[in-house]
Image 1 (cartoon, rainbow, N blue to C red):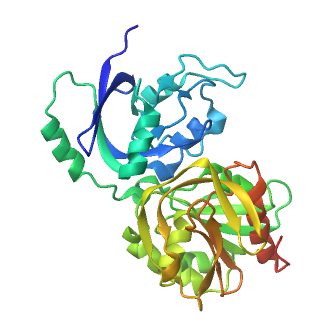
Image 2: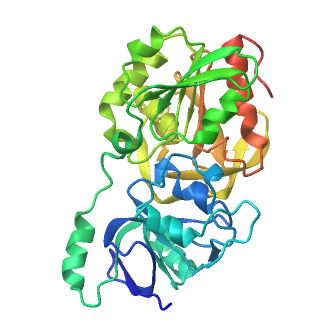
Image 3: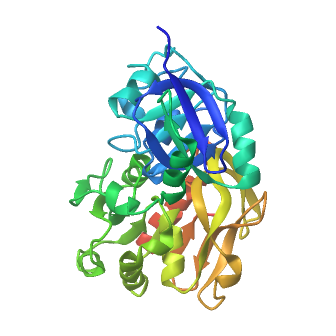
Length: 366
């Protein structure tokens, strides 16, 4: 069956022609690239991609199909998906369907046949930019560019967070109770806590801090999530209240940025962000480097961190950006990367062990 023609229009006026995959709905979003070779289903279902179209730099995508076990949330959150070649069949004993059918089911607009490595180089050199995918045979580039320039990634945390609190029992004997703030949490983050004897109560993003502080929890975790962290002004106020308590705190990705903002630091938008499973990060305290999974377009600026409040604990080996903070306040640390995402595959899960030790009042893992 012949595929419908599709066109990708970038904010800079460049056009890429390919074939339609997934939904044929017209879509405007922020275009970002991911350098992972595998894990496309986890990427699509990561809530941190809300409002974005994903360019996969690796040329062959969809070759092992999709299944219900690999989802990081209840549905995909990406707006669009751009690949060089989409495998027509999934070859894997766990395969339950094709990626093309999966994109269609969840109305994700896609395009294949595009030189995604060339597209990645453009986004690296010129920076992340908005774009549109259309299947229309005739369209006005000028009108499309007006819509593209007007697009903003906004209100994404409210879009992805759950509406009601949900309790996840510990795997095995329960030892601790954790409150996890859902700014766009991934399922494996919950599992990493469950596997360490934690009953995890996941709360909607705008839950008041008083609800958490009066809940009898042993610790609080702030999850990953999408969008500009500085837009979440009300959430930041509640995060500050959690920081002012004596509960152990651990934060990842957006949570790391929100806590930094709540304690007086600043964030900035990166030129093209970090998205992929091969980013080297150095733990300054222990002098070790780890390969990490990352998905973020904003970063905490090192010069804005008050040394009386926190110190930089992890840095990106490639360009020196902040990848973690260790706070002077007891039992409080954060990282920019995803320790639950298994790029190493489990090298950085020691951070969950450290959080559990903090809640138990024990000595942190090295």
